[in-house]
Image (cartoon, rainbow, N blue to C red; front, top):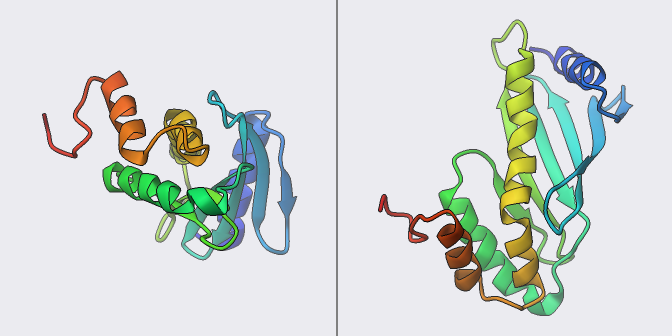
Length: 164
């Protein structure tokens, strides 16, 4: 799909589902504030439509302080190791944190509502799942390992990455 077709398809999905957004018809970008079910409270979702793909960025308002950045990076790296799609990024200089994922649109004539919904749900779900634990690491209330052990313990699965 071309960038414009991908962009128009995402806008149609947002309109159909009554999701508020702003759009940039020159850059083919869509921006929406999304409410979360974690202490993060919300994120800014930015969809950048390009030839053959759409990149989805979920930016959180909270920034990692200079003293917490090494721990936050460890936490995000450990989380990324377990993720199937997308991953967390942190700007090491500014402490900005985002979740990034993408949708390959190459060779597609169209994108279904189901695919768009799944694409948009993923970043929101990950921020809901990990948000409170990320904030605990950012505030230095928990170490990255302790936060993840608590998270995986709440799911009754092992935190080491094995299949146990």
